[in-house]
Image (cartoon, rainbow, N blue to C red; front, side, top):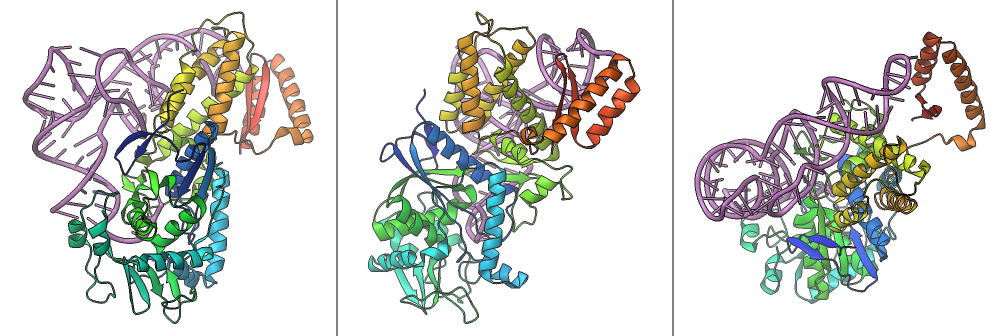
Length: 490
RNA sequence: GGUCGCGUGGCCGAGUGGCUAGGCAGUGGUCUGCAACACCAUCUACAGCGGUUCGAAUCCGUUCGCGACCUCCA
């Protein structure tokens, strides 16, 4: 099997993956700020890093997957002037901030379960780690990279850059940052506009506040990831993931905070997924062009022509490489839906095939091609393309136009089981499992038998009527060579 | 304006120097009472221009178009 290569954002090239502490792997992914329902854009990083988590685990690594929940400190606007996102939503909904957090964290978890993403090993919450964050601020101050002003503490970017390189991840030069950062019209306590908040003094009306040596207040947004990744994965860990839009300033600030407090480069491999776009433009809350996952699942949105199953969304995302943008459209999702159906039908057929004495087709290159693709920076679209080639073979065998030896058949079955279900995390979308539904099975059996009798009498008007009526209840009837089968879809 | 990236066939989306990506859609056929599924065959491509090379979608230059980040964002 090929060695795993990962595109490391900070090196701007693919690098062989060598964990710091084999076979253990630390994986940190920036989680959501839970002030609203998750939208399609959110599904990208979590499906992407679910693939990373699943594949690393499959390869035998012991992965600790940490993904935070942000419930405090993430401001609506500028790091200095904006309102806290959670607090704002709480005001709009007239509830407690923690009610907002609970509601949308639950909703997020539901959506992630629907997308069949595995839950992280640890899911730390920012407000539960105030002490750790305060400790880190103290260290940054002790090391001379921060300053206090009016109860707030800021990171001194200019000072830090004298000893380290602020901008090494995003490829920015400090001069450009200092030059281009928006001026704050002298309203700010910051020495320089490029500086960012480590601790903010809370306004009197602010509910989300904690005591600290500097003021009653709350931590800056960037700090939580530094503090929590350090706590659960150590001062240095293997992989840090997140959306490309977090690359600057969020991840840049994280590196700075870690180095300023611990003196160590925290992350070995930085991974950034690209955006989901809509009409070529990034889907985002601030742009107002987003579609929530629940809206996609229900079809209840003006841009959504039909309900899309969670697995369709997952497959849609996996059919593109994580570092490419992927554009939302109904056409693309419908193509994904049909493609997924074909792939899963192939997987099912594969289990029913009989082996022959020998193979009439050569399947020896499929498995290596699949794993080479996955090991080449998690290239799921290539892996999927290989699986479709296998589906073609599977269907040929089913049609009696090709044969597979016992060994080859087993190899394909194992491959599909490993890749389709374990690694890509796809699954059948069957909601009504017929095994606990004897009544329905009995009824369907009666209907199908009756229809068979009608068919024999060439009463085709009636047989078609039965098929059409059942279709109205999302029950599909198919007359195959082996007999009539039925399926119920959502 | 600065930094970075992208532009592939009707649509989506891989590929980074020579060999059919794949999916969806289309067309013709096989199968079917008719469908659906499936199978076989088939079609359309690398934004423009210039260069390097025996050979470029792939490397270099340039023009045009689009996007991301530089405010919050997955």
